Image (cartoon, one colour):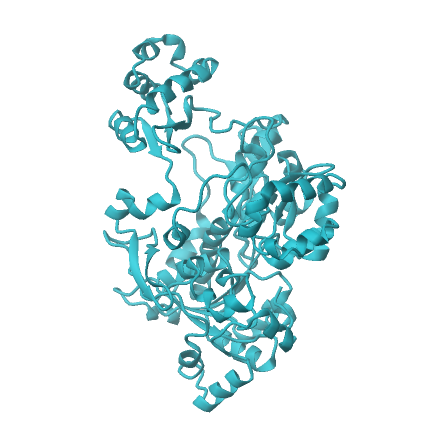
Length: 606
């Protein structure tokens, strides 16, 4: 949506498992199994090509960025797709781990069911339905001191789960810190969050906390800023400060304060520890070993601050054999099993979004830290949260896991259809690429739909009263619906269907949402001023206490914007000390180019 604001109408459907602006970011066939591939940075693209003995392709300056490669998709795929078929998905995955490439096998539902590690972690748990036993997906919010239950029994109709353990959290004595929140203040006012995260998932978690009033201090470095400021480190990009103009970064980091600290150097690390000593929450989505190697692992931090809630948002979890896997939101969807049940029979596994896992992981992470924060405020005890983002995607496949665990039948793929509702799908409307989603969820809705589209005979036909009966002529019904929708604008069709009390909604393009009547009526978009990009729209947090959304208090910080404010105002450093830190490159306000970074010889935070 905000890419559309910044760049115009650049996003269109470009085929299965292809997404602007990254390529490749899809699923490919191997000698055995399917492989999810994402090359988000130039280094990852080069490593992917070198792994496949395609160094010339990887070093081609015309293919430096994903948007460049999207101009030559067929040419590039002709070179690497045959090579992927020479080895299995598991063999490529092992190679990718060595080379720090975000690639992952795409599991079938049967693979997930047999996954010993996921069972040990509680990602897949036993469930009992009456006399039947099966498997389902466990809680992904893995609080290590107050862990979630592992599976259980589904209550009978009218029954309920035991709730005895809840009472102590509701009626317990609040800690002294709870007095910091006033009646009219935002819910998390007085809570301080140290944000080491980058990209989408971690920053969405901490942005939600900031939107709710927390003081979120985002830590970057001039040597390795948030990669959503851009992965282009060439001089023209850096000198033009293009990294301050990225809409994704601006949307995910509003309401935060931002500083730069080089954590690989003792002075920067010491300052980070001082911030953590007075914080309530710390969040990171680095690979699992990065902060512990710097001396910022949980064992060290709980000694520094016993009340601190620390969350690691890695791809597979801290104790996984795949703990070092590099991952994007696309990788998480690919590795969750979801693509194997999406799409039509006979098609490759189908991804739904270029970064589905990011938003899902971010929101689950926010829920997890709020639960741990509640516990810490009541007991005075912080804890470590081991959030494996791939597990956050698994509730989407829970129904298939459960059914497969009981009847051992391979899951059926329905495309835009539905296992229970007929009709259910996306239908073309008048115009070039306009579509509407329609679903008839009961017999009354079906009969109203049939009458509206001019088929009262269908509405009266007793053989079509059941979904099973309609399934027999589903193709015919879909053609009849589309004959009606093709004569109408998508919005007109939606209003007519809604007036007839039929579930329907226009399939919007991202750019359409900027002028969407519903979002406008809710005041969803708020105009915010920021250096480098000026006035731009920001999405309101969907949670609201009254008619109006929470106001956006501040635009996303520029790189190192609040260095002096936090280092002097909060930690008490003198002006001279701050100047010296900048002179030594421990803090700063300008991103280093690739050449400058090479001269400093600083190790990367992986």
